[in-house]
Amino acid sequence: MCGVFGVWAPGEDVAKLTYFGLYSLQHRGQESAGISVSNGRQILVYKDMGLVSQVFDENTLESFAGHLAVGHCRYSTTGASTWQNAQPTFRPTEDGSIALGHNGNLINTAQLAQMVQELPSDDGELDIHARNLESATNDTSLVTALLAHHPDQSLEARALELLPQVHGAFSFVFMNENTLYAARDPEGIRPLVLGRLERGWVVASEDAALATTGASVVREVEPGELIVIDEDGLRSHKFAEPRRKGCVFEYVYLARPDATIAGRSVHEARVEMGRQLAREFPVDADLVIPVPESGTPAASGYALESGIPFGQGFVKNAYVGRTFIQPSQTLRQLGIRLKLNALEHMIRGKRIVVVDDSIVRGNTQRAQVRMLREAGATEVHVRISSPPVKWPCFYGIDFATRAELIANGLDVDEIAASVGADSLGYISLEGMVQATGQPQTTLCTACFTGEYPIELPDESLLGKHLLEATLKPSMHGEALPVFNNP
Image 1 (tube, helix red, strand yellow):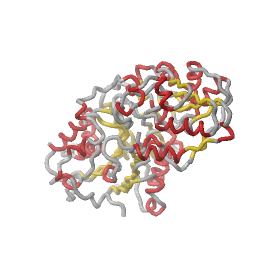
Image 2 (cartoon, rainbow, N blue to C red; image 1 turned 90 degrees about the vertical axis):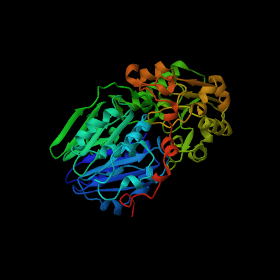
Image 3 (cartoon, rainbow, N blue to C red; image 1 turned 30 degrees about the vertical axis):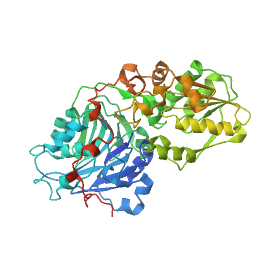
Image 4 (tube, rainbow, N blue to C red; image 1 turned 180 degrees about the vertical axis):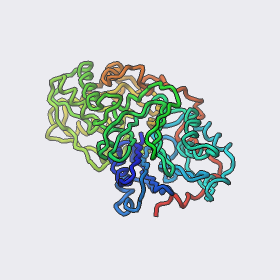
């Protein structure tokens, strides 16, 4: 998850462009948001916990003057959901500073932490001695520290040296005072696209953010590619051979339906998943309803293929965030109760097919089925447009441990009984992959199959709170004033 956005556009209001770009990427992360802007002499970073609209106001954005900006909205995968771990991360260098936003999750965090420990002292950096004060505990801050240390070479050269040593899923957008950089891991697990403005360039997690900011789509940033944008134009470097393994869950749930990934419309893929579900798991019913919003395209596909009428059975509170990406079980369960209400006049006396994108822990579906029963449904048939999630994701989705995944301990009939459904059908892996229009060899399906495209280290070197667990007491301290919001 996470949304990243970067813009290089002299003469444009880059802070507001970044704000609107992040607004369109809000679905990718709702824990914190931040923007860094450079005026050519210095970088100003403003970040806080909350939604983009809560963090920034008109006065804040007006105070940002510059030609270059990076923005981020966070969904935590490594490091707790705290202000210190909000992004963009900031770091002084010998001749300036660097700010970086990251979408993805790294798997060699322990190795990177060791590399940071082995860096020379910060005596040559700007005199704020960041290493003794920083209390960030995420993989992003490690990469920022390693990039910032580039004596006797340019940041561009340092990035080309460091990026091959960074393993896992990453779409980085970073900057110094004069240059915008974007890099994507060799597997291309997380999306990243390049766009053109009349007077500049934009990079973003999804092309919807380009449309929102008036940029035209140029192309995807290629796996294993570093893009550099400055007053001399755009330069591209290949720092690794591409081994494309795009996340299939982007098509199922993560991306906006109006996104296009690897040339395939996400909305069309989801509608086709619904059609395939109807072919694989038909049922006699009176009404097909979606779990809004992510289940809507698949539900419409199911209705089209089955001939069963499509209708609205749930009303969603538009002001409640995605329950899936809340950082704790308690908050997830509270969010479920806040999020949906059943439309009783649509449900009462009917046999219902309810279509959702996935079942992870089962809490959401259990609550939904109970609501439909209470609204008078005579039968509830659950259809899921992805296969059973059986394996945790180490590349940017916080699925937690295998023990928490309901499909690990129960078979399909037992899951149906657990959530209270009359029947349950998951789309086949082959059906889901076919709907994406991509060859299975170019997709990561690890959360369904356990086949991880990037070899994982020992389990003891993985985990969301790895750095908190290993952080030395001397590393704790106050956050830097230069980061602080007024």
